[in-house]
Image 1 (tube, one colour):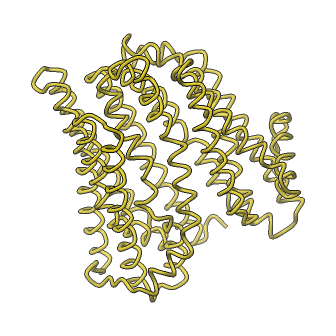
Image 2: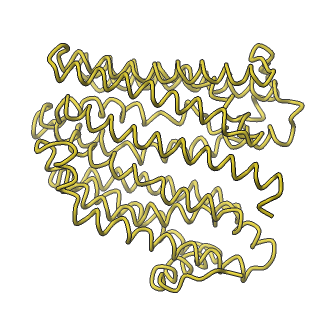
Length: 447
């Protein structure tokens, strides 16, 4: 089967995505280390506070239509230009709304001028996101190669620019606070490179973006289908970014703004390192997803057996990564970032616990997708956000960043495990997850 033309095409597609992801993660880690060392915890925290605040609105730039767009491009290739044009228009309006909300929010919160400027620059870069619909056309054609090459070029160029600016700060050629504006403009640079690359590879396919056309009917149809995914995406982005915003806002009242930004800087270092490990369960899940989907069409027993094996593998992966990380977190952080960021090592060790929920939640996506439980998934995301915000409010003033991490862990525990008690179908999945955790060593090949 692997020798068939279709299988070879899929394998080549996945290989390009894997190479691009590995390169990007390596560059993100490298630039994160260099930029953090150059700026110090306070300025690094201010930059990450601005990106975190804009991140609360990131879902508006995507408008929840990405998966729907790929699906419809596969089903209706004759409507390619209408789909791409309508999707790009929706994304543009979403990006404009994101800029307005982020700007208004920063002004209403009474942020200082530098932070407001950072937020406006970072948010405005999203206005170029609509061009990214070209990527989804390539995905619909199972042609990840051209897209991956563009994204790798973007990662290399933007990383080189960030490293050069960080060197200028370290050498004293540029002061730290003015440099923050430069780092904010790097987001615009990333989108300029991506857009130019996408236009180039799209043209090489014999296609022209000028042929796109946005229609009222197609835009309304896409919007009518995408709104649940838009809300779901907003909930996920809020849950991912609200910690940085709340740490700064809540600690400013007690510790002062400089100390609050420094705390955000320590938290951001630990968060970036733990997020860098998130690609491992994603690769496992995407690799096993086709086999699980095929098993569901064969028999329920084979389907549940493969889900169980996946949960066993996810828990085993957690043990392999989390235990060494927990034991070595502090020396790793000090080695990479310097003694100034030693407190982040304690946070990273605690963040290792979050990998358990990241792995199990990623594995659960196969169950959600195959069962079509998208409204349930939306419910879990909304409950998770509400819990995260509420617990942050209670714990951050006393426990600082450690309280934010525990808020994340508790909210994940409820949204990933506890809410599975709601229906018989989700209770069966909860049983599979718990069985996989307590019998992870029994992993076997499901026939």
